[in-house]
Image (cartoon, rainbow, N blue to C red):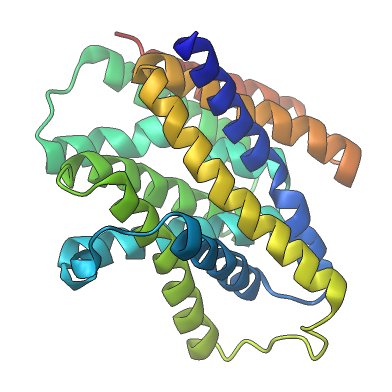
Length: 282
């Protein structure tokens, strides 16, 4: 029974993450930049957490581990939001899920994990899949599109976050959750100041505030539900479930944004998914 509840919890998480791109695009249409949208939505999440999910010890804010984890979490989430706002949703998801490619060297470097043959095959398949997704005749003569670059950076940072989660085993899930939420707020604020991003004059628009509140609440609930799921389901079973996010994103993008998956994206995506599945096999 616990396993079934765990699987349902993880599916809820993939459903949420596979749909969150849409409210962020709504905010973008209201002239709220992705950086400001991330800042405000995660600020809502942080405030909810302070009320219902309090830290037991705030001394973690004094450690360098907390702040490094916060920085990587901030980069991951903001680049992901910028990617789904500016690019095709499924394409962004596929590039984001190139995790075996980045996880292999990061695990070897930080965790000193033994590299298995399956990990090499997984990375090669994912790399080939990513190449197919990105391919066009002028690929080597032109720079990557901005959304592709954001997606790749987000995926790399996400892989680093997962590796660091194991590397910082002394940090509780409470600590790591707060680090990510706080990291997005701080990083978004710094980026906003550096690039002098302007918030819309009608930022206190009721509809805009409502969307921000919905995103913030969804992020908070999803974090807790997925954490529960991970305690009920082993990692080998959990990893393929997260790939359901690509399907949710594809269907929602088709109906909500009239986006169609191209043939090369489909075949490249199959290789990326296959790479992830191989990397999670025992």
